Image (tube, rainbow, N blue to C red):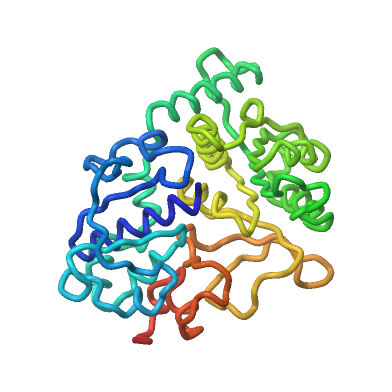
Length: 337
């Protein structure tokens, strides 16, 4: 879901800067529609299966050179564009010399995806009701006054796949780093009994969390796979509740955690046992703690705005400088076109 939302947001910016309307087939190959999850943004943007939409010229969302340097407007690319995938290409469009001025005028603080999340991707009524019910139920469970919503101090977002026992994505060292990082970040007065929420991607992952997370924690009901509209709504509620946590510990490779950080409007933390990528200086991190090997540790993102993601490194197909000049900080941009 995280990658789909980021892809639609990228397409929305492309439509805005190139003076086009946006038509989305969100449910194609997926289990929920935009209307199942979000409020209407004030304009019709989702096509049903029966709607006829002009296919237009196909734009490859992995073609970073075209997105960063090409004329994507009606004169240069034709009246209609067709983009398919789940790639996050927004920073390339935002830094395209033909559209930079527009993007910066509309989003002067550079918080493009964050602004869209708060304005365009607002949770729909069913999602809001589910979230309110959960937080009120947790408040009653915690002994709070009637009608008071539960609040989260520490959140763990654990992406560990459907078979984390045989194919664990989180190593024993990373679990240890999660515990050390939580102890480091929590105020001393709250280290014994913090209010903790855990969001995971599978039921086995929840069971492992019960063994590895050092505090009692809350989850959203019984785990339900996201293979139907209700399951996808529950996944969105999980993300939104996690985003309310004062401290968010995320899985570094997960778009889910990055989208939660955008909704929260504050930076998340992550742990890794393979070290921060030294070859990508645009990915700025703040060290919270480092392990004895000097690489493993707990780090904080310095921006909520995500970096471009277009699949494996080899698929980018453009000069490496693209990855270092179109991410995080627009002031780092240099004309590679």
